[in-house]
Image (cartoon, rainbow, N blue to C red; front, side, top):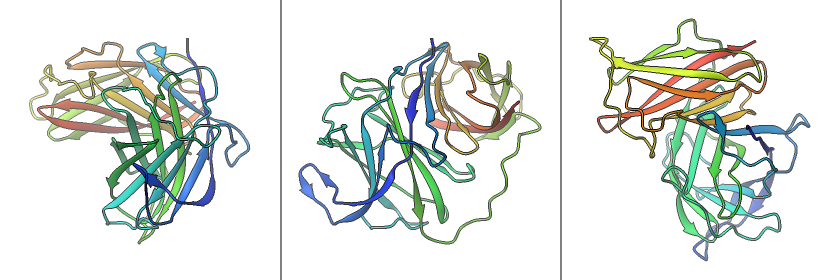
Length: 289
């Protein structure tokens, strides 16, 4: 049974973030409450899928998130300290979190055109505050997704757009790949879709092989406790899916993920696997008609 978490856009506020009880300099913070509506006036959806089953709860989460940079405003090319503050619906800190795939929080960062992708893991400092160092390749808009499970609660995905200073790179319109194959670190990764229609179960089949010899890679290592991870975003970054393998102990050359696309349109897919200590990230763009 698949369940959907409602995830909405936030409002701009000025806040004073604290970590471990120590006040920091006042910095701009972006606050997000999960029960708001997005800019189009409609709720946006977040899905957690594991094999053929969705891990998320069926109710709208009542946490809120705020993001802030200690430098005030992030600038491309700089190493930036991002502070993330999680509160409940009464604006009290959320103190306890469950480990989810070896981490208390997964942070997904994407650029507006989805050409940039980063999957990192903030460090918990206590009292609902996480922080992490990150950098941005160019100026422009980036969306931050926090993916976590509060103790005693349901999985939550909260997000917001942030503005990064510096020279922006030209962006190309997203378009579907003519061939679903990519190479990284000398490894070839092929993707096959069982179906590409809205609201229909589909199997994402990844085949990982040596790019030179074509030999299948059968010694994949666990990545965050499983055979791989897949993150999927709609072209407008409003639909978010985080999918885990059907067989979490698979070692290749084939790893499969079961999911469904919530609506028609273009989607960017990032498959992530680990081989010989290196994380392989394979991006694909598909169209759901």
